[in-house]
Image 1 (spheres, rainbow, N blue to C red):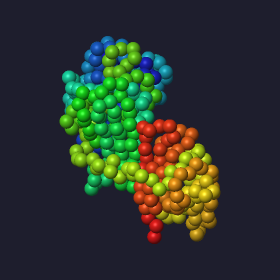
Image 2 (cartoon, helix red, strand yellow):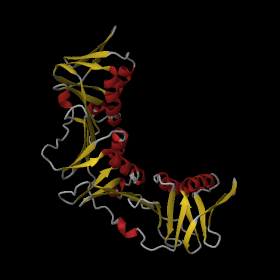
Image 3 (cartoon, one colour):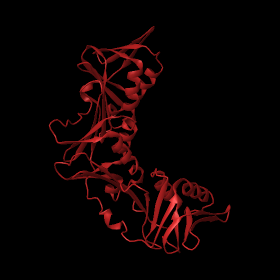
Image 4 (cartoon, rainbow, N blue to C red):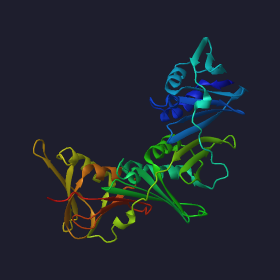
Length: 374
């Protein structure tokens, strides 16, 4: 293998590849990035056996070949090189690096020991606007909770039906659902549960990219692929195993009727919740009172060791006056995932599920359970 590549392009690729690498004592090859020189492209592959990232860099290939090298060490080393062209050459499982007046050699590993990454050639796929898809995932991804007893809620639930993608996640205390409208209907209704880690990697790697993302379907795995602008060739592929199991029928807990419906200024509501959180006790409780008569919402919290906080804000209120307590962290998470200037806050009953959603956007809903009164 012999390759000429710009330091900046290689470093950017390694920054992505090394995200999938951690210290693995039982299988040391996973600490490495697989470097392959193909036709006009240098590819970098890394995996933890559950998720794999493969990316391609358009560059000058002098000689084809491949080698596996320690990912984090190689990335740290490349970042210290001057911003010049780098010559990479593999000889007898060593990688030789030349740049300006520098010559270095890194001991590599047999690339044949690197795990085989599954291919998705000739499988059905769906095309979605990348930015819409990444934003949709970002609105639900942090709600999922790692659970050994209920692995299905550790992941993000995707439903593909007609001209719609539903993305949902829950930790049993709150739930988020995002709907994305497709330009054309899916050929076949499908669903899968994607682990939280690859879902976060999709956001981290692809959020800023304009274009189309392809979602490939398989029985127990899936792949997300984004293409280069300058060539009809993939730029990034994120492959992941799927979580086996039945996702809970979450739609049953979304309330259909409400005792009180309130419209609030999103930023003011968020800031008042954050202020009240500084005075909350061990269970993170903030008490919200909807006052129908005064058309106000009162937010109250107290901690015997610190003091108490009380604030009011005007609101548009329909329904009855009511007081309900919440974990402030859950309220803040929901409000941060809403970008509209106003939010709808609906309360079904004192101890029933409540809903936060943006005004003017029916595609997102956030359901939160109140703290039970003692």
